[in-house]
Structure formats: structure tokens, C-alpha cells
Amino acid sequence: MRALLVTSAGVTCAMALTLPLATSATAAPTPDLHSASSRPPSTSPASPGAGPPAVRAGAAEPAGSTQSLPLAPLAASSDRVAGAPAAQGLPQRDARPFSLVGVVWDDPEAELHGTVQVRTRATGTTRWSEWQDIETHNAEHAADLGSAEREGRTVRGATAPLWVGDSDGVEVRVRPHSPEESDHHEHAEPSDHHGSAQPQDRAATPVPLPEGLRLELVDPGEDPAPEPARSAPAGRAAATPAVFADTPSTAAVLPEALTAEVAAASAVNAELAELGATAIPALTQKETLESVNAAPGAKPYIGPRPKIITRKGWGADEKLRERNFAYTKTVKAAFVHHSATGNNYTCKQAPSVLRSIYRYHVKSSGWRDFGYNFAVDKCGNIYEGRAGGVSKAVLGAHTLGFNTNTMGIAVLGSYGATNPPAAAVTAVSKLTAWKLGLFGANPKGKVTLVSGGSNKYKAGVKVSMNVISGHRDGFATECPGARLYKKLGTARTSSAKLQGR
Image 1 (cartoon, one colour):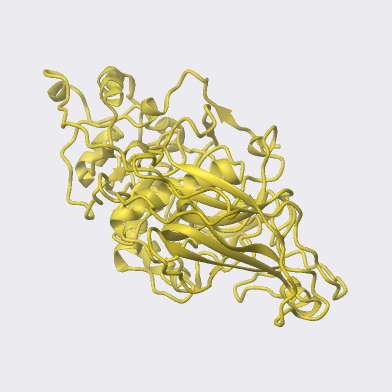
Image 2: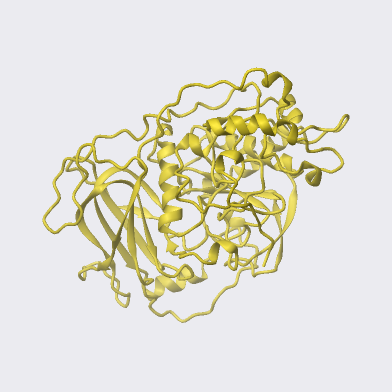
């Protein structure tokens, strides 16, 4: 359906994350990557017949784990809406420690028309949370239909994941919409709708829940162990330009202004990559332009490269993902999302949140890798998402219908009713100024994208969008939340200014 460039299996993730030899610039506070997930093991005993017992002392799985529990019909309750199908869920039960929850089902094309609520018990206590809503999601973040990521994999439908913190008890209920609710949601359209959706005229009939509903309980595992500081090989730094091995073929991106001279630095960068960089340092504007070897007299609009915490830095288990990488030709636009995982996390916990989402995307939803190309936490730290090289046009699974030639940025949290922190919006500006600049894109400009098919635009339709768009611009969804969506104008202006426009 569309061209995919997939590397050979011999290319390792480390090679894609090479580290340039340049002085770090000031960046957002970096989370403590070595203490965020430390927690006492659960000591509460499992109830008879209640399922797996809580983890005993010393038995925690450092690489993380997933518990998948089938849902069952719940006894009829007084609040059941007449005419609605039966609710499903799980009564209160013990579980091995987990920190993130979500619900998946068999058919990725089936939609869950209903509400999903969960409450959890804090690890080692008798304290239960209030009921919390889980965003039903319904395929809005996913690989495009007909793409390689959909082929040969067991992809599932899924809700958004919800971060609940260290827990060892859970209760969940999934209530289907009544016929009236289903009809209302079927025809409801976001206020920014542009009239190209595919409305369906359906009678108000009960919509059953998808088959194969399962509750996924994800333990992110422990944070990566601290590593001794290592310096670059002696005698190499002064002679090597600040270029890193995953720089795109800039001659194809801005042929009139840039040339690619990556080979001269490949030996040193490969050696540094083998050391396993946990962060790619920030560069000044001058260093950034030097890193892409701008032609004499050229004035490419590329913002300073921000500091980026690599997958190794947040502890990604590279054995989980698909071995190969997938690329598109360029990066024309950026779609901004919120992760919808809630705001009850600290910046020290952000790496744990990322590991949980990663495991949920791959093990629970059946995706090849983490869906978003980048993530940003509430303190403004920027993280590498999907593997393949932070400066390359890596194919993501973030905006159904518009994954080709775009990148996805997820701001960790839920921003429908909560204002996004200024640091997070600033980080989006910095990241887009640099990454879009590498491909010649103007953050304040417009771009024409061809839809791969969504609930808003039919496949093949050409759509004019902002170069920095919100998820809802390509899919009828509330993402990235009304409050974050309102900040995208600020992000566009700041990003273009950082590019020197």
C-alpha cells in the first residue's frame, strides 16, 4: 500500500542511538533513572481462589511483566440501563504487583461502546482507590490499515492504558452503552470537525461488548542500574565533527543547503553506541548546524537539538519489540497526543510509565514497538520512543491513517480538563524545531497529507493540516485533550522562532 524501508536484522538499536561529540546545553531537569520504581514488595496474602498471590520479597521481575485476566459477566446491578447488554468485569481480587492497567479485546477493528472503570489497592495496604475512568481509545492510536505492522501479528483492540501506581489489588467493570448512548456517540463529532468524516446512519440498537475482553496488569520492572561514567576514546573527539550515525540523508531533505557527511564520524560513533548512551546531549544552535554540515552561506531552519533520553536511558527491554526497523521517506508533520494515562505520576516515575506503555503496546496490543516516536513528561524531559534513530523518519503507530511521513509526540498525562505544564509545551516546541527542521518543515506552515483511512477521512483523501497538528485533526477523538490542543498555537510559534524563522 505504501513504501516501507526496513533495515536488516543485523542493525542493532544501539547503532541507531549513537552519541555526537558535543558539549551539552542546558536542558530540563533529568529524572532520577535509578530510583523511580523502587518499591517494597507486597506482603498482603492472596485470598483463597482469588488468583495469583502477591509477589514475595526478592521475587520482583526486573524486566517487568504482564498479567492478562479474562473478564466475565457481572451480576445484574441496580444501575444497569434498560436495553443495554450485560456488563463485564472482575470483582475485587489480589494480584501480583502492577502499576498500569488497560483492557484489550480480540478484534482490533471492533469498537468498545461503553465505559471502563477500575479501582486498585495500593501495594502492601488495605487502601482502595476511588473508581477511575479508562479512556476507551478505540483504535485511534494504531498502525495504519494494510500496513506491514498489521500483517503477521496478533493485533488487538485496546483501551488507553491508565497509570495507577504500585498496586496489588484490582477491580474492574465494563458497562456497555444503552441503545440511546450508542446512537449519541455514533453521531457525535468533535467541535473541530472539518466535514470529511464517514457518519453511519444506524438504528438505536444495543451494541454488544467486543469479544475476548481481558484486563491487562502491567509491572514496569525496575529502573536500569546506574552505570559508571565513560569518556569518548582518547584522541578521537577533537578530530571528529559533531555528526551522529543516524542522521538522515540530508541531501535528500534539503538538497540546496545540506550535504551528508556521516561516514567520517561512523567509527567513533559506533564505538560510543556500544557503550550504550542513556541520553543524547543538547546542542547549541551553532553546534546543531555544524552537526548537519550546512553548506557555506546556507541558512537552514533547524532548531537547536534538545537533550533526548534514549530508550536505554528509560530502560526499554529491546527483546520485546520487533527486531527490524521501519521507515518512511520524510517527516512532513508532527501529531501531538496525550497518553491519557492520567496525571498521577512524578517525573521520577516517567521512565516507569514509559516502560509500562511500551509493554502494553507490544505485549497487550500486539504492536511492533512503542507507538509514539517521542514522549515528553510534565517536567519537559524528552524521551526517544519507537526505535530506529531519533533523527530518522521512523514509521510509528500513533495516528491511525496518518502515520506515513509524520511523527507522533505523546505528552504523558491527560489534558482534557487539566492544563499541560508550560515545561511540557516548551519541550514540544524544542523537539519539533529540531526534528522538523532536519526535514525542511516549517512549524507554522501547512502541509498536505494523504489519509490512509480513519473515522474522519477516507483512504486516499488529501488533507491540508498544520505542520504541528493535534491527534484530533486526523481522527475524530478528544486526543490530545482540549487543554493541550489549545496550546498548539503557542508551540508552533515557539518552534518556528527556535528555527530562526
